[in-house]
Length: 105
Image (cartoon, rainbow, N blue to C red):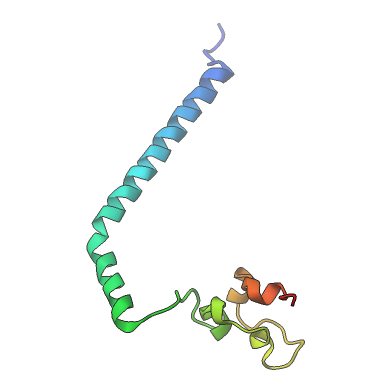
């Protein structure tokens, strides 16, 4: 007597159905969290307007990774031109476009 083995298509459809169920759960959880954080986001918006904050601080270690939109070309090499990267966040975040691509005039 052979054991019961489901067809591959049945296994695949079961996997797809479970994956869609998990995906729907993730979307529902995200919507719930957004609705629950409404008062906190309103307070943060008020603080941004009150203090005149401009940029999001992504990393806390180096000034050129704190505000990438305000970075200059020489900031990572302020010790000397061939200096190695001091901070790990410099390898996680690429330079901003105005530093990577030279403007042609």
